Amino acid sequence: MQPPKKIKKTENNTLETIWPDGEVYEVSMEKLRDECPCVHCKGETVIFSSYIPIKSPFKAPGFYEIEKIEPVGNYAINITWKDKHNTGLYSWELLKEISEKK
Ligand SMILES: [Zn+2]
Image (cartoon, rainbow, N blue to C red):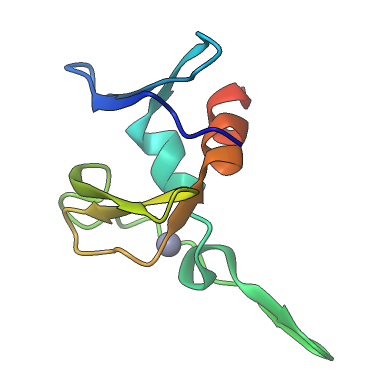
């Protein structure tokens, strides 16, 4: 999958991605963070047991704010949130999937 041509933070606290085929997606930071694919947020299934994280209603300051975005190879971005959470890798596929989700 081709990487997006452009990834940028907009003024309305959304992330805009522009793809080589001309498609433009915009996704809110809330959605992006709530869909963080890392083990802490999404849990994991190990044989015979699964770990399901408890969603705390308390959100740390900066929970929905991006501090920085770094490319990972040519297939994903790593987002560091202002509450220092940075273990989620967003592949291009995942980015599109989250953006399309209602
Ligand atoms: Zn996470």
